[in-house]
Image (cartoon, rainbow, N blue to C red):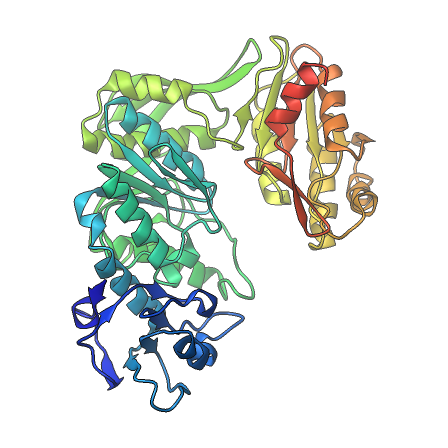
Length: 489
């Protein structure tokens, strides 16, 4: 229970009717989840407008409506109506107050950028936990609170859920939270209501532009930049061409890291690829604000950038060099160039690459490891643009020595129709391929045909542990499939 007028402290509002001197039981922004005595916030979304459900929310027991415009409510309902300029923005501050401003009890680290957010958050968590910190995580894959893992629906949840998770983390004695901060999350004010201690920028490429997302690249960049007027210390990749534009107008102190720019506060030098005994990685020297030799268990320049980002953050926590080194060498992220040991002779990786841009980046990175053969196993999701299938087929046909075409999430389409579309793309190249519709059979084929020095990558599913067919999600985790294959099941 909380008193409405206390939750409204610091928010510009007009009480249109009723009184703010009343207790409320919860905050709800989905009319289907209204509970008696709650605040119902009328959110204007891309597909629906919560103002249209105001009357239904009152009938279901909502005591307070927070609106941006006039709403129709039953006569004599005794409801309080509060008008604000933007309900998404107001919800963030109401939620922070409702949950008791839990962010004030912890250090909050936010990571934004087109690529690298997920891996970087896990690296930071791993390093900090090496020295006894208890770290909560909010991201694309999951929310982690101690031993509790909650599957994620969005990279950055709605502000109410962010604050609820913060509360749960604080109650679980977490002293730090690391979270992915998407451009959508910033645009929709999901991270308002608190200040980040550290805001991180990894990189920026054209993405998430279109209906329901960002109108153009300038809008995408602007939304990323909002993090740097909401944090105390900004840590940015100064090798990225957009870093100065992203930090323009910043209100925080700014630190830099990079590979190419040796004027950065922290940089990597003497970078080299590792490929030994079925395992891949990178070795490099850290220079500038810290000086030591490090290795990662993931190949590619992007892996060095991710490691530098984590180091740049963790040095503020006075983490000893030996703990950083140990954590970097052992850390891996589910579904992000994730190694799965099946042989001493060749390497098997699982990765989430599920579009042409991501697949090209992945395969180009793995090519730099000079494999005997590069084998790419993937499928494409049903009920999605056919162009993605053509493009991914062409990328794999061009960069892989062998493509194994299989099924992903066919949804309501026939798997063979999707495979045929992928083949259309591959046929534009000279790439060799086989098609095996059943994903487990396809993985078994890849493993049984592995040769010394091969790199085999299972692309597209990554952290997902299901396969969606005709509206039903069936359990399917590639790690489980691999184990069953190795056990002869």
